[in-house]
Length: 218
Image 1 (cartoon, rainbow, N blue to C red):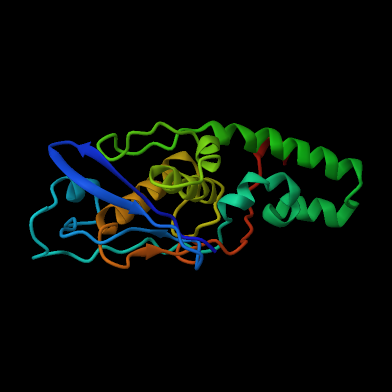
Image 2 (image 1 turned 90 degrees about the vertical axis):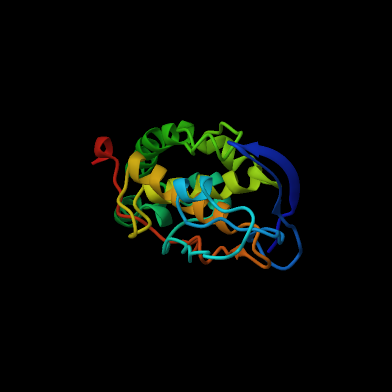
């Protein structure tokens, strides 16, 4: 597992502040950041933008959403190789008709036609926070440091939410946008705290499955 490191400057609204974002090491695949003298006050967009940059006093606890049952970014990049274990409806078709059956091949094609367009959805975040404009697909392709690494993980969070893997949220686009906003805000608020990280486990990457079924394939 790996950790990521990227330090750079960015103006955010009225706040000019050097930010250290993501650190890479050989110990674990987590989103991590370096210490700074200040932290944000609340785990929300408005709280982050109005955060006190000069003191740690009155800092409020900000919690990560409880995520479980999702798939990792790497898994989503190659989702067509294990669709039967990801989508229960496809697993049922495979069990009933066999891996090499026409029925299973047709069901897979139908699911792919329903799933692939979601990869072109925008990872919509408050513009005050991020200079990037990425789709789910470009997020999955962006693994590296800085914002690229954040979007790499947000792409997986988006897909896990959209297709109903996370019980914390509903499914669909609005819920997926809410989920990535919650995760990004949590990271944004805490990123400068010494030793702060978000692990794969916290992001709910444990090879879950979903009962989501494309209406056109039912």
